[in-house]
Image 1: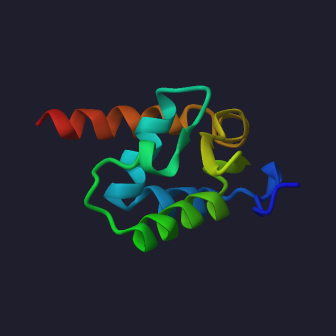
Image 2 (image 1 turned 90 degrees about the vertical axis):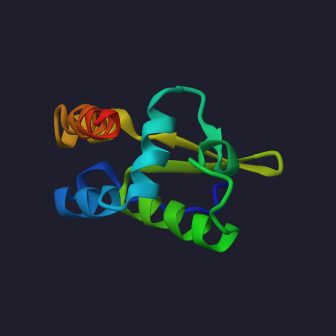
Length: 108
């Protein structure tokens, strides 16, 4: 049984997704998750090791409640995956554009 609540695909909103991605740490987490299909643990997807666990937990909660990531228990770890199919169905190309823009901004 998955103890985490995730919004249904039709309940994911554009404003919720954009608000979740508006934070640099959350955007960096999503960029890392976009690189893997198998998912990453919370600490593996963290962009730096300097984020306190309580803050990191809040970032994942915001991403999960916005419908950007799916979190599930695998053994003792919480593994996160990007809900790319759901997001691409609701907002075609949005995630790819946001990730590309973030990567371009990083290069500057």
